[in-house]
Image 1 (cartoon, rainbow, N blue to C red):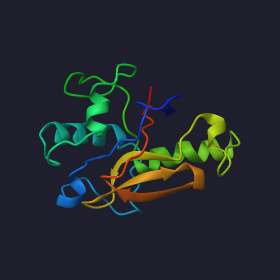
Image 2 (image 1 turned 180 degrees about the horizontal axis):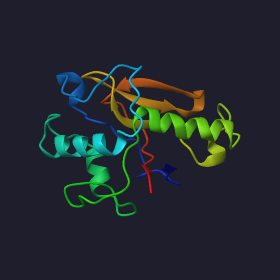
Image 3 (image 1 turned 90 degrees about the vertical axis):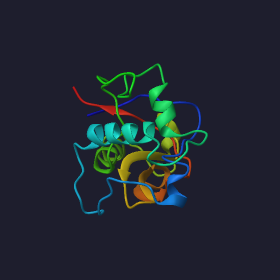
Image 4 (image 1 turned 90 degrees about the horizontal axis):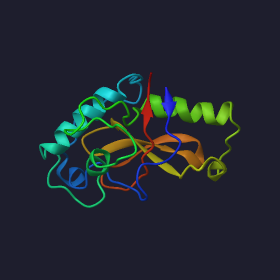
Length: 158
């Protein structure tokens, strides 16, 4: 798996702005579920659900909007069904972060050395209101409300 060298967009993005209040998320699983390899499939499900407004009305700065309109990567979307870049699952992003910490010398609070922001969203939902994210500056995975902003770093496989 390859982690993109830069973030998608210039700001943080919400998974589903109205999904938190209305408890509209799907594809959730328990923390002990090994979701390695599910990122591409779940990104496609997320985009399809987002396009059909399954998460409610769209708000500003949502992941679904930026992924479909970001020109630098070939991301799966309604416009590009052969896209190869996708949001990582919890285990996929965790593996990338583990590699950066163990092999590349990333340290807690030293993430700016690699151009990383503090928080990155995954495509994995914890329940019908929360999504998993990497807290890079703390070296851990955690959950956050789907309406809270996080940065996006895509992955791909060849």
